[in-house]
Image (cartoon, rainbow, N blue to C red):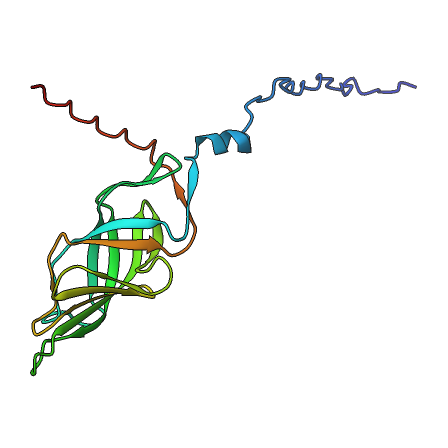
Amino acid sequence: MAVYAPAAIAQQNTQPASAAPAASAETSQAAPATPAEAASTAPAKSTLKEGTEVNLKLGQAISSKTATVGDTVEFLLDQDLIVDKALVAKKGSRAVATISNAKKAGLAGRGGELSLRFEYLKAGDVRVKLRGAQGKAGDNKTGATVGLVIAFGVLGFMKHGKQAEVKEGTPVKAFVDEDVQLASLGPAPEPAPAPAPATK
């Protein structure tokens, strides 16, 4: 008896598995900057002490005739501010005060009055709080008819029989109201050399 056997035999496809890509043995060796390195790039800071004298000059003329309580009054730093041989605020930096009292001259010889309260000096991005007195209340005469009175941070100008008027450029002293950290703007400028004595 003849037996028929199928001639087609299934053949198994034996393809080799594709090789996985080899992982790179090299890794990035770039390390972030350390805190010490980051700090080395920041500008050094100095402490401006409470009570430090600040020499200012009035940046505008003011008069008791036109001044109003709450008005802003601009001052300018009259000389570089130096701390530990480092420059922390340049001459010409802006300082601000506000009018705290203003009275026009009146009858019977009543003089005008002006009072200013210091607010701050702008040193870079920092506002340095100021006051008008170094310590307790005191006074300082600036002329026969004009008195400059400093008491508890308030600067007062009074003139008998006339308006209290203060010219632009009038020098005024203020004082730092609290310790503050300021970034150094560089070394203090070298003082100008003294002029040579005249020869006879």
